[in-house]
Length: 241
Image (cartoon, rainbow, N blue to C red; front, side, top):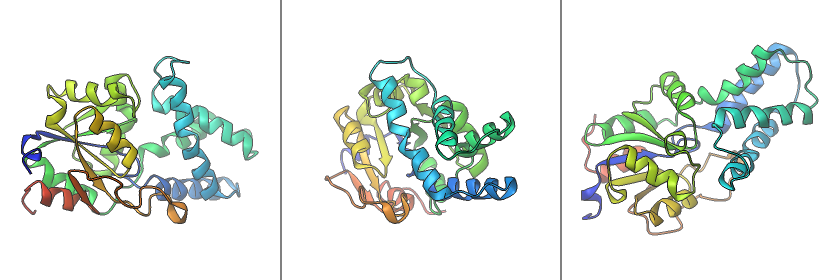
């Protein structure tokens, strides 16, 4: 507990940890398809879109292209999928609507309550690959009570590069050991831990639906391991609402 006593801020992975990207995107894609008379396997479409997430960021991480915000990368991936799924002739407003699905993802049921409890004692912020505009709109849509937005656009680096974490801590005027990353992904926590961050694993077994095989449980002795944000709040001594 001594290490956790030094924590002044908790920062959160967002996609999969705070919000249900898969369920939310499938729901929106299905509604869009029904309204436009487009019949496709929207669950597969959502999974394919997420599948392009890491490769698109790797172009930036590798230095092959300059830093580019996630909204732009999401649009580029969407355009590839529209071609793959033979969806042609969408007007610009429809394309923008689809890109902004990522702005409207629903939180997991425990997220808002747990965040609110943690906010009563600590700075809480994103530490996401999401750009600022995306994260702010998601927060407004889903009632996420962030104190501020840090992460990729602030640090000018995508996770899991060290600068994504170190730049986020620096933006909060904190040393790495004063910041705890909360994430549902062991690899994210491992990268953060190497920079000196404290760590909290929150299991999200439904993130990938029936296909999830990784991150079903912790794979390391993280500072906290639990199955909800309320579990994190309990471990950090935050009062119940």
